[in-house]
Length: 82
Image (cartoon, rainbow, N blue to C red; front, side):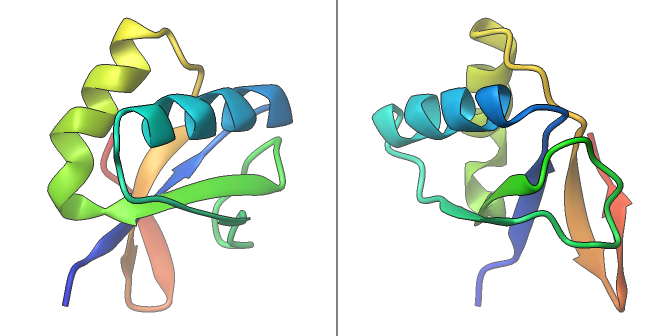
């Protein structure tokens, strides 16, 4: 079973932009509400399998996507990994 990571954003515009870029990069993603345990300015988050982390980081950096952070679920909460 793959571990899924969550990208949180400060704006809906950046979330939609990231969604488009990651789909184009053929990253398996799921758009979902931001978990309440993650404080973010946007109610929309993107989840993806951890195996795509390097590709996701590359897309975010090269396309200058503004993210609040990338998080991994740990127990009942989330820890920021990036």
